[in-house]
Image (cartoon, rainbow, N blue to C red; front, top):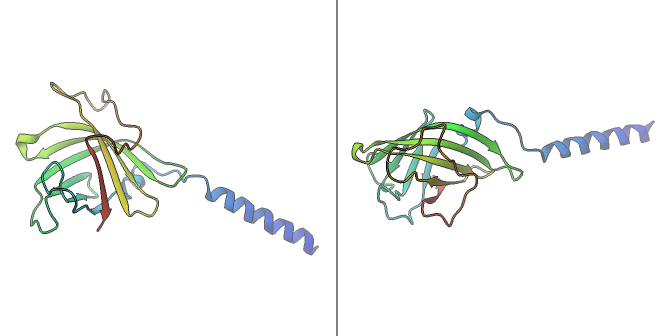
Amino acid sequence: MKIGLSWAAISILLAILGCARVPKALSDEEAYQRMVGTWVNTEYPGTLEFSQVTVIRPDYVGEDWLTPKSTSAAGQWTMKIKKTWVDEKGYTYSQSYNTRTAPEDMRHSVAFLMRVDRKGKVWECCVKPFGFGKPPSFEEAVYPEKIDPSLQWYYIYYRK
């Protein structure tokens, strides 16, 4: 009888461990909320294109703060989520269509890929610019599929 219980306990334990390796399916909202927060990289020059602080708000708005000492955001952008997923390493990804809304003279849209590590401490993103002319719509845009640090518009920040 004890042997049967031991095998049953081992089977349950193995089943639990096996499930732990399968990435958890998240809703787009749950995945996005993992990105929410204040992210800092003081190695960046503190310009609007490479701000030292990025704030991702729960309401699908991002803000660029030039430095940690800035008293207000220098730029702002909205996000429309296309797709989210969790990979086998536990990293959470979000593809989005981002439109810069401020400053007004820099208004444009880009296809964006964000990734936050399993521990929620590192946020990376890369941008696929559309070039000149009218930008493609949300549906027509070609979204990055992987984070590529060799891209011109690659960013890495750390949770504040």
